[in-house]
Length: 320
Image 1 (cartoon, rainbow, N blue to C red):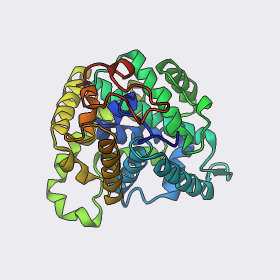
Image 2: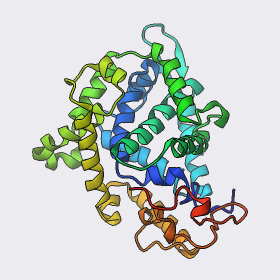
Image 3: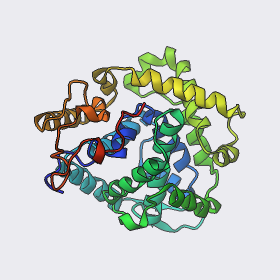
Image 4: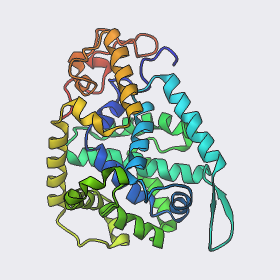
């Protein structure tokens, strides 16, 4: 694996999903879904500054996802060690039982992983990204590698849509809306802006439609548990999601990437440089590489020098 240019190659299903701008909706949806696990929610509540800096947490999550997708193996290994080290040192105190739990408990890590990657995949597909069931399964198989960076064993992680559905069916009896979960969802619908963004407060009402869109993309059973907003027709949600996705995907990559932390932007620039040197056409940025016609005749990012042409790729035409 050390000869790879990026952790997930442009031919991967992960590349298609993680370059789609619907990821912003998927990320917030994932946080809302994660909050339904009482112990996982306590872990966030007791060990983070989420309510003081919600956008910071979202950007840090984007940095991790970016590095284990577009980063070099060394960059992914480094952030994996950092995340595992942080989790290893943190504890959760259950006020009902008095018991102390580890943040890096495999069951908690698995819940967070599944809530996150299933949200990315389901939002992207509902928003119009053309992945069939086989390709969706491939995405989840590829995400087993991402799960390994936080300390999970890949074989313990759902690697298909059927396995993911079975996992959620198994875990649902343990989920509930705690006071912390309810407060988190209300906060995500109407967040308090950090100090550096307080000047944008007059435009804050424009955020609510985005937060509501994230909420309405939750599974029906999760919305029923929360009961925060009145139900709307699913077709209206899908149409709004498609409009959001099309608008965001139309943004030039340099403009869109300003939302990331400087270190994330530097990592993405490094990925573009490595791929460009290997013969990929990066004139349209990383997102342009969802088109196999911009790949070289042989993929140097593929172990063993296998062909990276469409015959080896995800699909022969770019997903839209």
